[in-house]
Every structure is written in C-alpha cells, then in structure tokens.
Image 1 (cartoon, one colour):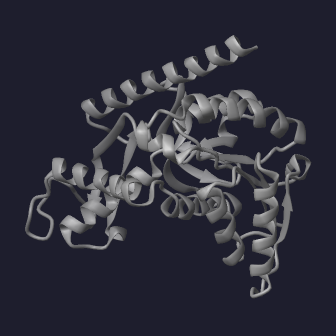
Image 2: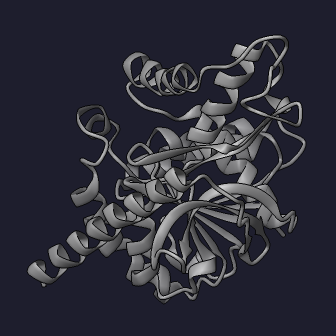
Length: 309
C-alpha cells in the first residue's frame, strides 16, 4: 500500500495532493496543516473529485499518528510572499515550523523518507533532520532539482533540442549559492564546449536564461508550484519503486560536513550512493562556499531555538 503524508497545504501542498490523487499514485494520503478548516476543505474537495476516478484514495487529515506506517512524508510549508522579497527570508518562519512539527513526526513513529520543500532548502532540511532524529539518508530536500531542470531547458532551447537530450547538474544551494557544474553538462552525449548543432553555446547566456525561468514564475504567479510538485512526485516515485534515480537533492555530504545539493541515487531507503563526478576546481570551490553558507544558516536556526527555549 502506498501511503504518503503532506504537511503544509499551501499552493504546493494542495497541488501535490491533487496530483497524487488524480494520477492514482497514492492509496492513503495524510494531510496536515495548521489550519483545520483548510485541511477539512481540501479533504472534502479531493473526495468529491475522486468520485470521477477509477482509483479511490483514502484521505486522512490532521492526524500525526497516521504517519506511522507512511513510506514518504513531504514537508511543503512556506510563505511564497517572503520568497519574492528575499530568497532566504523564510529562515526564521520555517525554523519555527520545524520546531512545531518535528517532535510530532518523531512521536508518530514515522520511519519512512522525508522530502523537504521548505526554504532555504538545504539548511532547513539539515535542521529538520536534527529535530526528527531520523538517519540523514532518510531526510532529503528537493535541493537544486528545479535549478537543474531550468538549466536543461535553457540548454535545450539554445541547442534546439529536447531537454531529454541534456544531462548535467546544478550543485550547491537552491535559490542561493548555485553552482552550475558545466563540467557535468552533456548535450547529445557531447560536452558543452563542443559544437552543438553547428554552434557554440555560451555558458553565461545559458545561466541567465535558466535564472529567468524562475523570475518569470515568481513575477507572474507569485510562487513556484507546478514544477515543484511534478518533481516532488518524481522523487516519490523513485522512492516507492526503489528506482535509484540520480538527482541533485539536498543531502548530507560528509565531504562538506553539512547538507548541500549534490547528485545522489534515490531509492526506497532514501539517499543511496553519491555521484562523485570529476568537477572543475572552480566548481568544487563553489560547492565549498555554498556549504559554508548552509552551515551558517543551520547554526543561526540552532541559536534561534536556544534563545527561545
């Protein structure tokens, strides 16, 4: 039985719940939010929608105890308005949220895999892992998965190819100290510095176009939701099917002694083997800089908690 929990029923949480139900990807769905009326309303709406579906998922609300036998738990909390003002503005609010939900997740007996979507993603994922007391491999964040998808689309558009023909990763920190690892990018199997369809692709232009994609979403919608939901469902699928899918998620990387976005294989147990690709020295330095920033953010959250105790 596929049992999935979602904590936080804002834009992303609601859309993810809808996707999981209508695609038949879940048998039991546990929905939790600080707003009881919102949770009840979403449960009612999804249950009405399910009448049109062949698959009828069971939807449970506001019950941490129901998470005990869930395989996956998605933390989808956040304030999209704060992201528009400053990418790291959610540090304080999401630290407070983790301090509320983490003890209840721990007390529920949950032993599955947590996918954190809250920002700043790597730092909040690290703090969440410390508070829920689960092994690091079972607590991951969406990391630079979206940043990498934007890179693939920018390269594909410039090369006039399908994004499926593009490989490579963005490392470091989502919406922060991003490291575009050009050394890992392949187009039709060729390195980026090769002639692609008779032309040379400019890295600086590619990065600008990849960043613009995020800017357009925030300016037009006020938040990112659809891409985040689709990629989160992709990660959930990799966990449930033990796919060992390679993605640049937010994970604990022993080399940097902290969580950082780094490509790893995702399967039933959460994080599997890391992809230790040969990077340019400047890329390795960039990841170290991102790791230092993330460590500082985690330390700041720890101080906030201590001050409030």
